[in-house]
Length: 294
Image 1 (cartoon, rainbow, N blue to C red):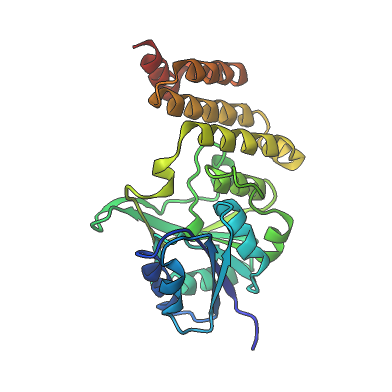
Image 2: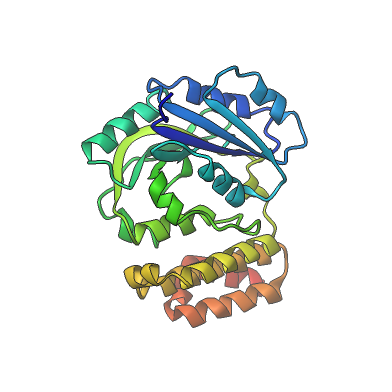
């Protein structure tokens, strides 16, 4: 049997009630040359049993100890046999022509290292909250200001991921995808097809909605440390990196002030000012400062 064109890497942790929908959305694809690599990151519920209901040889299930999604994604990438790797969060889903559109797009563009398609965000009732389908050829430069890319919608050549992957640390739980996009964007043009092919579901149980300040702090500092060690990244984004860093410090400050740790919040506001003095005019900076004062 020949290797699949796409490898879909799906990290999952305690998603017994949602993972079936995600997997079924892959099996419903109109393009059939794919494999699904489900990386069960130490689930303690019935996630494994839910995956086992599917009798399709294209589904590869791996159970491992819990090390968080950055390591889980790398684990899946290492086992991917496809030419391109795509990701799917276990609480989201693809539309039926997701892979067909991607296959056509990479062929039309001469097999680039990176392709990104449009996506939409819905609430639990299916109401569309936002659509991201206006990407342009300036997305590489704009990425330092906004993480507009989405794991479910990005297709990356396996050869590129063999060189640069997610941070291999369980502390990388926030902006770990942004870190990877930025390093790749400093090296390869990001090609975009604005047809909407996947959906992100916003709900209260999303892992990003349950993060504590200390974990946010560790993750962001780890990401900044690794970005600063990448000379290609620094040359590409230059002075804009300080603005990026200041915004990340403001975000840490916000999470700490929400937890009523005003001293720690103030510390990161000061770090933001050191990195990029003009951040003092940013809405995020002023909002955090107001919360500290009140």
